Image: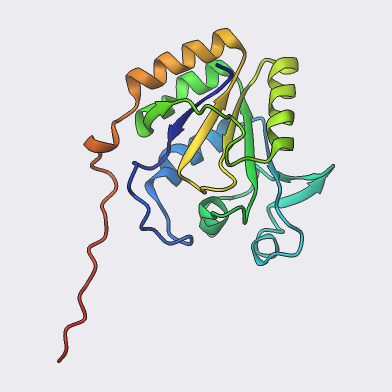
Length: 193
């Protein structure tokens, strides 16, 4: 096992707008971004509307974009975090193991598990870069899905750290079935007047 994932929103909660503010933004992303050492985006196409709306928080550096962690990068940029269908690319965030453990992020996550193919839904270059950083610098790498927006986050670390984090995630994470934070919106019927 060289990774595991946790859901950032419960399974089955797919009825949200890309511009919508979600609990995961403040409960998970905000503390992670405050504590992160660096954050990169791989696979964001240059000629997209999404990039043009994020030029003040992103700077191009060597085949990827770096997120300016000194700025507000969530409020007003919800679409950046929620974008699906490879519109935004893979987001990589790096932080220290002890910092991640102290944040208790997994208490707001759901259903930890593993994928048979760790590259599913990600830029291959992003995964390669992530693995390089964690092996050289002994950091934890978090990868936000290029294809599924805010649905899940993959965790990469050295073997011992990964086992420790996976145990924490299994104990602390919620089950999608027991969620009370996310509420499915009721569809309003349009009745004739």
